[in-house]
Image (cartoon, rainbow, N blue to C red):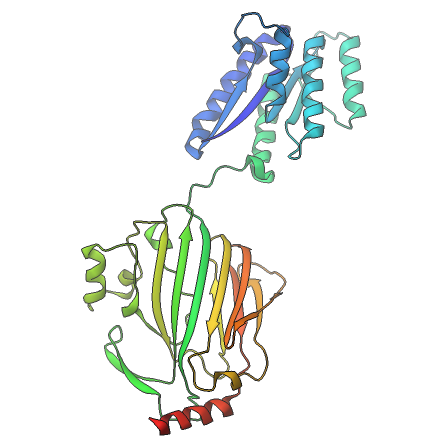
Length: 385
């Protein structure tokens, strides 16, 4: 539960406004507690009456310095204690890295036609020096409306006041892609080998094959439909190798053995941990025009790595015409394409790392393949076998 402390300052003559303000905050809390946020209203009536050595006002001032929001309602006069509380709030605001507390002032215009008192004028002049101008209101309904608008604006525009997001977040994602086989389908009619795909109920000719090992670490237990994330949809997916490392239930075991289950059912795994690991094969997805691999963020990811490994291929050191390049963009909105650096961590193994990926962010690693070398390597390999 996130607690937002609000200090309410006003003179004793506005006691009825203070009581109505407290009722309003309690009403707001009925909705906000469902969002894991609670408004803790601090008023001087809530303090105990026992004596303190530094004086009771010092206790109020200390409470002001620790609040997140400071609200001041004033009218025909501004007492010295209200002025002192405001001064403490303003000085705390100036010294805060988070610009806290947020200060709201509401001037209740007198209804009896009285002129502005000297204390009120002095306070208004002081606010003007700070380039701050109070909201002028005629009654409490206007205070209620303006404060609610101000409060909602904070939750939408100021990160410190955002409602807590209790959905599990991806703390880290690692996508490791190992190329197992590579042949040029357009030039080499002979596949590397043939494989029976249980999901498709048929045999497939394999020209290229890559194994995807994906590690997802969440901040909490994710929903089952969040757990599995295919990084790309080209080619054929061999789903029989999905390994929910953290769940050994019979239900998951049946998922692997029962070929009659739908593809959708296979993609949903009952999570029992915040760590998810899977291994999946992609077949015939890396050919001319599609020589790239990518990783995608379906939700926010604090840190992600995409690693592509060619080191198991025959002649892997000669098959790249140029060094691979990577880019990052967001498919949900018009955004600039950003270049991402690629590091060769070992011969034939390439990595790019990203921080703070947003939902819809995609990172693509492109490869410039010398297909003549591939054809020569694969032909020689086939001859040796």
